[in-house]
Length: 148
Image (cartoon, rainbow, N blue to C red; front, top):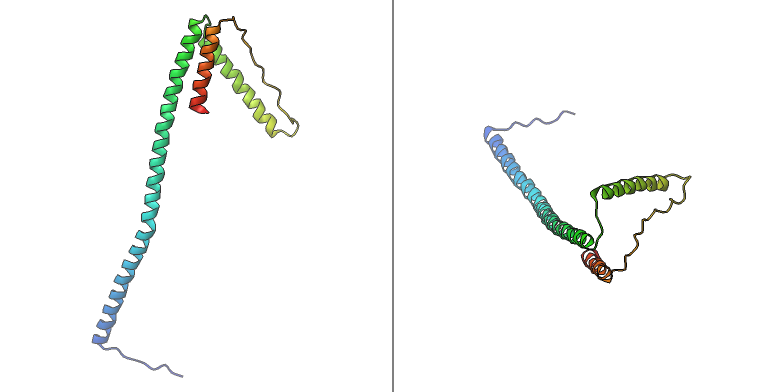
């Protein structure tokens, strides 16, 4: 069985060449349209996410500023009522808390430790000043308003 040989004339080849170029151009446009239809919604969604993250950053910065302001007010209130706030004690407390958190994290992962030891709490005795108690309650309410 021999395959029939067909000879193409130059006009036939030009016609086929033109058809292939037209198909390629149409296919290229279809691919571009498809990619555009897929990427545009994705880019819009990414823009929305970026806008939401920017809004969250702004809100968090505002909350941080309010917290700093409340901390300053609390320090002033404590200082006015006779309590001394020392940065050294605060940093030591943070260090102890960090060490305790590391222990709790280790204890939670370790099968030997079922429960972590209770945290040690330092209690300050009241000097009986009713005004400072009201101020502390007001600060608690402000804190709950911010973070509650």
